[in-house]
Image (cartoon, rainbow, N blue to C red; front, side):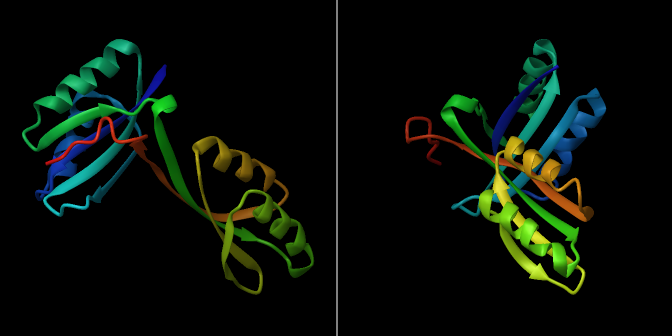
Length: 165
């Protein structure tokens, strides 16, 4: 199975995200992550989808997405020509005596502690999926109480492939 990152520029209409996810559901395609947000122009939304499948399925996904009426543009975000980031919020049960070890890990990974409670802390981390996975694996000795990950958002590098609407 391969993964591809697709970036869609779509009209900011009611139900557009539902129609896109419905296309995946109807065809049995796999979505690894999906993020959506308004662009600098409020008429448009940028959607980043990480899809998995063999090459034929990934080509079909792109073709089917292009047929949707709200879709203005589809780009594949190639790793070597793009920047990807994901946000993770991680609530960890940490006794007061063990906090220094977690704080050191947070510092090494350039994450932030955004909440401290008597028996837990919440860590905010951005980076690529591998960095976040590595950080989470180093927290093995602690109990992760809750974990929220956004999925990736990405943009192509430079100005060469910018779409002006």
